[in-house]
Amino acid sequence: MIVCVSLCVVSGELDIVCSDHCALSMAQKAVGKDDFRLIPAGVNGVAERLSVVWDRAVVSDALNTHFYYLFTCY
Image 1: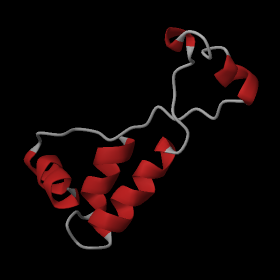
Image 2 (image 1 turned 90 degrees about the horizontal axis):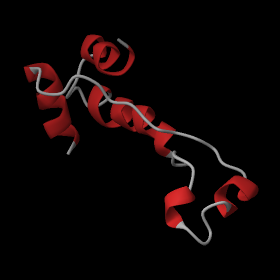
Image 3 (image 1 turned 60 degrees about the horizontal axis):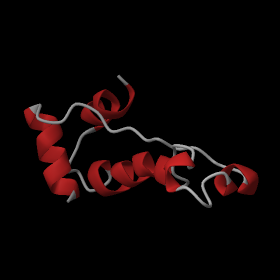
Image 4 (image 1 turned 120 degrees about the vertical axis):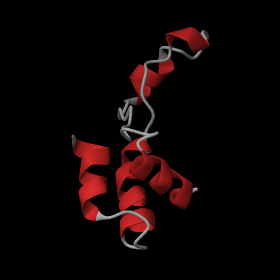
């Protein structure tokens, strides 16, 4: 998958990687206990995505640091 993502970045098909990270308290999560539609937006752990892209793409030379910066920060 990382090679595919890297190729999509280099070719311009994919512009950015982002996350909807949001650490929620138990009380905030409980709001949607009886109605799924009321659950607050955001997912714990999604923020780790950028370090995974670095480890799998940049460290393996599938993506250079310049494209990583453009892909994640620009």
